[in-house]
Image 1 (cartoon, one colour):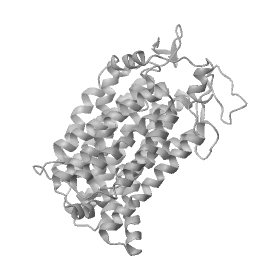
Image 2 (tube, rainbow, N blue to C red; image 1 turned 90 degrees about the horizontal axis):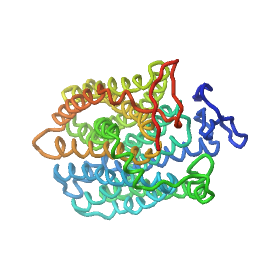
Image 3 (cartoon, helix red, strand yellow; image 1 turned 60 degrees about the vertical axis):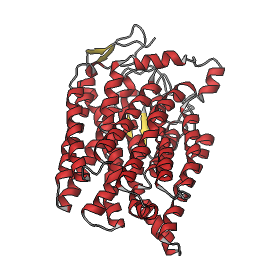
Image 4 (cartoon, helix red, strand yellow; image 1 turned 180 degrees about the horizontal axis):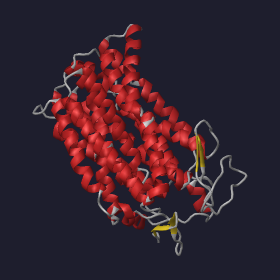
Length: 467
């Protein structure tokens, strides 16, 4: 697969030291999926694999809940609270990661978080009560902040004309870990049981697989990663080749831009509902349709695995629509996909037959994950100076949305899981429609230098200057 930006408007010449053609800022103008060229494509692969690893570990408990709840005597409230905890920690960590990316660079931020999360993953094998289960899932969830470094990194490495596609691929393949873990953990669990371990010991040993993945990825990020196409952020700042911004200015630029808060809301009901569904879907099929653990896990895996095509496709569609309709095309993309996702979520909760339920789940998955990609086809254009903070706040919005929906609909015994899914679908549609049709989003600024005017097909789109 290869995607390439048009040459129109590019003033730079491709430097001979780069394998891919680059623009005047040394950002790659093309994307070659099966290349590991340094630094652009190597960064892409390190980024999505590290994010994938964190998704695997964060949601590793979900397909094993029927076993874990018997071992630890968990009530429905305990399982629901653990689901809330797993996505709550990264509300804070994603905000911090945005600042770390702006000030220290994405390589250190991503590598340190992946490495620091490894001990908490191993600790899952030691817990013996509900309190320990909830606490450790909370701590593992901090690692989901690697999403912010992933999106930030792509925005610094690839040209804006293909950033929707690249962001969609990196985040989509990373999110795919939420589906892959539904397959990986039951397979590892059964393999360990065949080696002679008891049921309640096998699930604990299974956690060593994602723990080791964290260690390996942390070392690869530190040894092979690079912050920017020209080098690492710290060394460039020491040489005087990059200006070091004050954190207060970076933060203020993000907090006072009202479009940031619109993206926080939108992402809360795209990524947020995806995270919530990752937590409940396997148990829902196990209990509601009386399936065995492997079958329920396989069906649930389809939800997360749709990321392999849905999010990248919506990123590409965002770039494509922008060529013909400007920023409005990107906004339409968000509105249609996210509203459709809410409708399919409502159907999923109402479906009583297994084939209809699976169909609704797959369609809901495609639309919800595609909406995530569409949102990050727009977010990089809000502000260059505060890119990390805005990415962090938007990402944190996803986790806040997940926490809210899990608390409202999937923690109390007041609602069945099916009813909770119906209410979640209604909430998605209610929160998406007014946000996407606001005029504010259609005037998101394109990054241009002072005095420059960005045109598209002869029509002035918007002029924005980051000072």
